[in-house]
Image: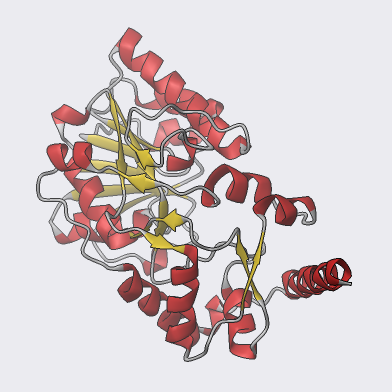
Length: 338
């Protein structure tokens, strides 16, 4: 199989790249080259900026592909550009959308691909929905061979999934755990969530590549395991060798008193209990099984962060904000109790 990845070095795509190369497929990567040194040998590098349409057209002028996978498109203009670039040059175009595009709040916690797409809380999700709608129109009217893939919360050894963090990532949350400080958890921490390791996601994704039954369809790829946010934070704390000091706060309150987009990432996503039905994926890819349990993958990710100083990006602004929220909640309790 001859495939082109637009991107190919992110949290989701890196494991797919490794798996494809290990299986001996012919893989091209079109990206700006900032992280290509970390890739395994064997990929053909087309170094350039996909946002420069003229440059990208020159890079692929003499090439045709069995599969083109787009990992870094977020607004309709970007998939409209891809349609112009790849119409007639690929047998399948896979677009990475998002499970956050599903109805929020959900009418039913059980999510299938037929769950309505509607998220009034998060512009990111609405843009993904608009991308999907454009691509499906191109499939219906022009036969453009699109497959839409919806990941949920996918992580790798380099990313510890936590609910409330700042713009620099999760390290400050882990550091607060180590220091015994209160760690903010949205809601009461009992809502169900699904975290999927990128190795498992890769198995499902590769199974969809070149799959004629996936053309013109949408499918999500997640683990079948559900855990609560309390359990996620307790696993992380255990991996650090500490007891967590979890402080629960309403998602709407956290959004109201923060400059972060918690309206989108919490109210429009993580605050909701969701359980994914992967029946469609398993019909399309019968061999798919997610084999990395949450506790195993989270411990691996924590170990990576502890052993790689470059992953330990401190966030003093988020740290100070967390302290202010904790103090405000404590004052509120004291005031009400008199």
